[in-house]
Length: 332
Image 1 (tube, helix red, strand yellow):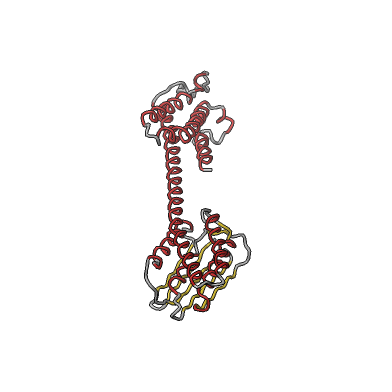
Image 2 (tube, rainbow, N blue to C red):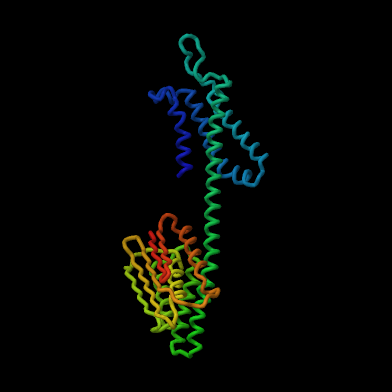
């Protein structure tokens, strides 16, 4: 769209600056107008040539000599072709007083200035637009690389903690071990098939969270007071995969101790286009090791939120001596 608007603007200049603007019939038969219009038409062709070929093929590959030689050829073409009406001796009637006719065949400072202006406009705008396009492409690639890096940190972290849960059940020979394995299979299938996508259906993400919480219920049983509620109607909304689970996982890592009163409350609600996640856990004593460090998961998720939902989320984390809470609102 920007390219089209630029071309329209270039082709409008000879019309807007024509002294015969109020008289279309006279303007269309004026060699001066035709010369200007042809000049800007050639400038438009050079605009596309510079945008699609010269800048990406020569400038970006540091072939500066060839780039400026090609630009010089473009300038010469604009200057020469602008003089087409004069090739056919197309002159208006002489002005009263014997002055030179407008559009007479004199290629001097005035013509050189006009050709330079047309060339400069076409060259600079096409060059700047291509530079901006490449910069935006680079930013998008960097964002995707950062998101991929963050996912590689989140997924193994989740897997190790879930396997620990299965291991704890297997140690006590729990009858719920097969069900836990089935839950883990569903979780890992989701991680394998969906986590690489930019967005997934919200219903799938909620199902993933349900399976995770069910797995934790199997592991901890009645040792934790758990409140979990979901108020979401089928709506067709999509969400970045695994963007909510780190906050929930953190609550289980730091809010559960079989020897203490443990309490976790999780609420997910959808109001119009706004998804709200509330997570609360009472802090308990636990053994500190590499798997219980919460900072990495929280910071990774904060980074993903900044990349995926810039200016479209609100995150409030309450870290108090006795409790930890998270309030996240996403504009989907």
